[in-house]
Length: 157
Image (cartoon, rainbow, N blue to C red; front, top):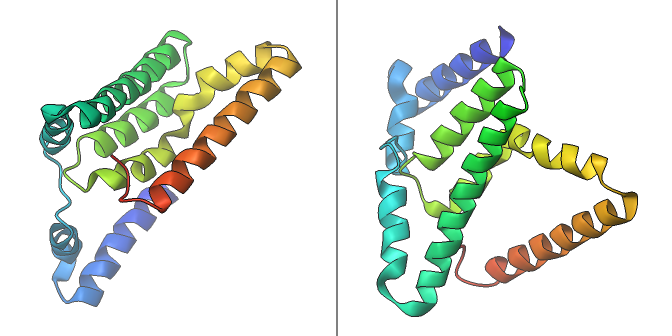
């Protein structure tokens, strides 16, 4: 009960601070060109990657990433995760993937969908310790390389 009240309070506070009234928060989001378009802008962004060969690899990576996110959600459903957890991760994922915001913010918007990682955590918990350490180590190094590369470059694909 407290979390939705906090979210509503924040939206009202932003509206008050910007002078836009109760819906002033939406004006701030519009200024950043954030909105909900059902994934149209994201789909167009991915499709634009297939105009040349090097960027087509990024497009394939994006499609594979979205497929992985959906697959992890389906695995969570099959594992019988609690309904509130499934609803939460489903809504967060839909909001992140269907927003018309800048693509570089999509990974950040997916961070709260951490319950999607529970099937992977369960698989790692069942694996031998040496294998779990190896997998987590490889993922940590790959994440560091990806972050360093895009931090010093033009941003995510």
